[in-house]
Structures are given as C-alpha cells and as structure tokens.
Amino acid sequence: MTEKQRELCRYRLSQAEETLRSSRLCLENRFYKDALNRSYYAAFYGVKAVLALADIDFKRHKDVIAYFNQHYVASGIFESNVGKRLARLQKKRESGDYDDFFIVSREEAEEQLQSAETVLKAVHQYLEMKQETEE
Image (cartoon, rainbow, N blue to C red; front, side, top):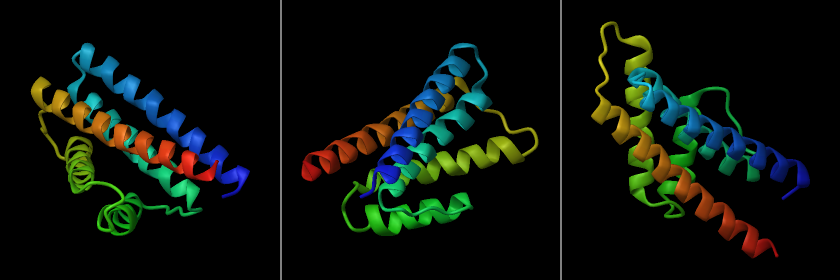
C-alpha cells in the first residue's frame, strides 16, 4: 500500500466522521430528511476509505457499494449486517432525495444514524486491523 493510498483513506475517513457529525446536528435540529442523507454519506465515505487502500474507486455510488459487498461483505471481511445497513441507508437516502412528499420521522432518522455509526465502527475496526498487519 502506498502513502498516497493511506493519505486518501485518512481523508475519506475524516470526511465520513465530519458527515456523521453533520447528521447528528441535523437530527438535533429536526431536519430529519437531511439527517438521513448525511447518515448515508457518512457510511458511503467510510466504505470509500476502505476501497482507497486497495486503490479502487468508482464514479457511481451503486458501483462502490456493489464492489464493497462483493469483495468485502460476501468474502466475510465485513459482517453481512454491514452490507444490509449500507443498502438500507442508500435506499432511504434516494427516497429522501428523489421521492416527492417523502416524510422522514425522527425514529427513522435516528435508526439510520445508528446504521451509519455501525458501518463506521466496522470500518474503523478493519482499518486498525490493516494497520496492525502492516507494522
């Protein structure tokens, strides 16, 4: 793994953490649809941090998630619930962004925030393990 890959991974992870904080602020201020959107992006940036270490990137979200599920979830590197949470986050984000009259409840926004936190926790554990194996 190159220093450039590690740097990109750190940047994306930082982006994920900042976006997760944004989701919490949206939730606290009752912007539930925005909280849902930010929760998805926090998890998405976390997944992209993982892919950065393998020098893998895609332009489309669905390609990022499909690759992650095929190469990291299906292979057992990440638990299946991480892939399921990521899929639900994506679906809810798309509904919130594109469906007219889509209403997000506080409970739904909280649930999606918890999903994003779960995904990022798994990402952090994976990255720590990768760092330990490099040393």
